Image (cartoon, rainbow, N blue to C red; front, side, top):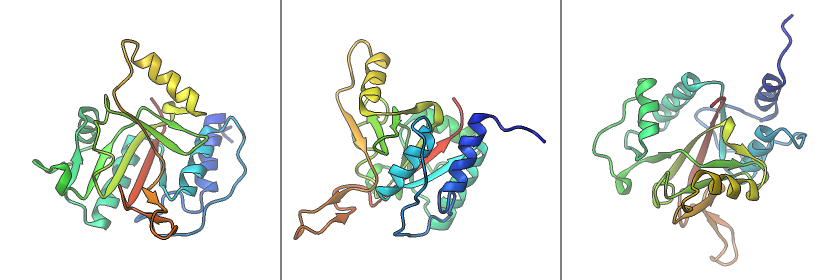
Length: 210
């Protein structure tokens, strides 16, 4: 019997621990998955904290599985107007034969797809910067989809800031944003409402590798 590596064990735990690890078409649920997390298992910690903030998390073993999940999601939701502003994501889609409609602007899109600088496991947050995703791609669309890799996971906020400092030694980007699930506000009669000042849904597809 083949012995699983520690990495494979972690990824197996993600799929087992999440109530519905790949619940396409991502059905609504009010229940947060609960499972034990070791401090070193950043994938599990991010998945739990992101889901607790009403983010929709999905793990992909490689880019081919990512493409399959995305195409199923797009088809189920009938999303045809997809806004992609980053060349690296366009190249990824080209490799996986995912067609992007031409001429889609952010104001009219069904969903915006971005990368991120890193994922913060402790808070379940995606660290975004204007140098990579721009200032508006993750904010103005009704749905934000983030594609990240397991190599981009860090533990805490300070680790994310250190990563930014190392990556941009000549000067940090003019805007750094932490996105943690759908936008929310309690300004309306002190009742928590989501999707008021930003995306109503936020997806994170975590891909093994890089």
